[in-house]
Image (tube, rainbow, N blue to C red):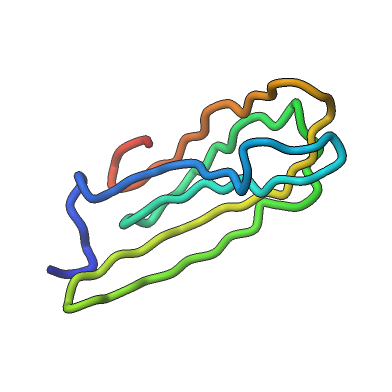
Length: 100
């Protein structure tokens, strides 16, 4: 298999460094696109957070036994503006002719 993956191998997900936090603490929020080159990232609204840093971008490729995978990650460092349950909205990215 080459590094050009088929559509079913492409994924776009979000990750938080922790699910619970104190008011003055921080959390890392990441958007991860796997096995595709992405364009036109539309990040979510962070209206319930103070954005302390970001987005920072990292990329990587792994080949194990001839099978390749890649990732493109955008990360923000966030601090909550208030106590309670907070929401981060949806994000979109274009990859391989589709919107994820």
